[in-house]
Image 1 (cartoon, rainbow, N blue to C red):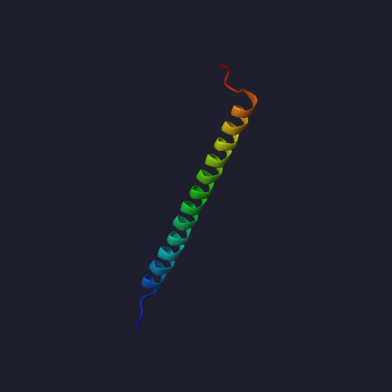
Image 2: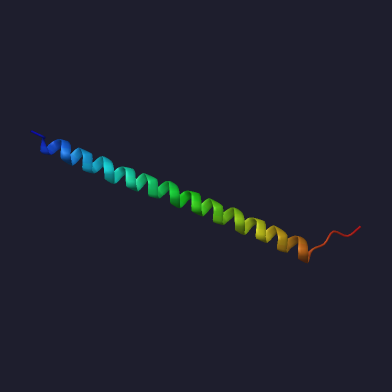
Length: 53
């Protein structure tokens, strides 16, 4: 016979797994977006301020 405590612990573990996985996915997406925006700003800056020799 299964203990209700084990069922609760399994459910809590599953919920924590989903939360941590979602957090990692969010941080990965945010980092990718920030890097893309920084590269775009660098390109625009180079285009508007060409080097003078």
